[in-house]
Image (tube, rainbow, N blue to C red; front, top):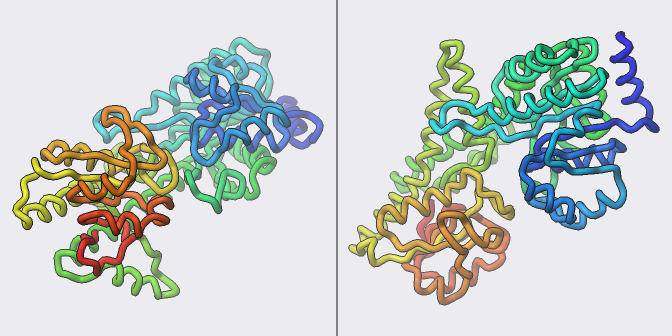
Length: 442
């Protein structure tokens, strides 16, 4: 064991010696992780290039779902925590965690690793300006296998005086954040870790054991990278299967909700996935495409995943088709129709709009000359669309069609009010009795 490795291991094991942690990116992944690190006794600093985020946090204001303002104030009052728009705190950090977004490029096919590359570039600058010490660098952003080694470990080693396995240790630990989930959070969700070498794996395992309940060490970083993509590809494929079978059942007049409930009575070999108007968030619409890209790098193909993604992507268009068929049967022109969308976020009881199928449906309806408005209890304004319309009996009554896209708790609690005042409801979430005359069930 090198003296550098000995020093950092000793620091991890000494409860009185504060581990200095820098978390780069304070979104849905980084901020909860920062809170856990601070509460676990680390000296934690969050870095985000968005000055608005840092200003809000300094004024004890949360910017993400699931974390309340009072939690930010309590954190600042009781623990060692700080926020910064620059990377200077990296110089003193023992642990550097990268939790920046990993979107797709404009072609919606190719992974965009620029946020990671920029973070690594800034980390290198700060390491070169600081005394040599042991550092553990962890990537939590979702990537395809090999990125931790090629885009994080190699450039830091190459452009600094740090030596891998001696004072530079690099690992991948995929985020498993589920916004709005009241049962599982950053602390009690099992944490995968995999290093670019054995020492990095062991060191990452030792670090995360201080801040989460369960750590699962994989043999290397590529296994952990692959496992993350497998998790969400599993969900994407099974949602697509539910969507495809729902469309068949609907065309044949078979109630798919009953089909799904019946199949789910089997106590083994079946996991229920529900169909819906599309998938949203960062993970399911994006992660499987990272896996498809990775497969193409080695001249493999993933036709099952590619087909599943196409099915899920087309669901807003399928919902539009149902709407058009409904009014065509009634011989009503779209120019005479007011459509009222209930729910614009990608899942219930959060304000997250990332990849939301409701937004795509909104634009599709506008393109087809429908007059569209929306209501969402968690979103007051959407760039490019406008203000949320209050949910009142007048708004419901004047709309020729109400489209329930998200089953927010508010809608569940006021379903009788919505049902009483709406002329017709397209229910994509099976919130209403599909046998009722005014209900069109997905």
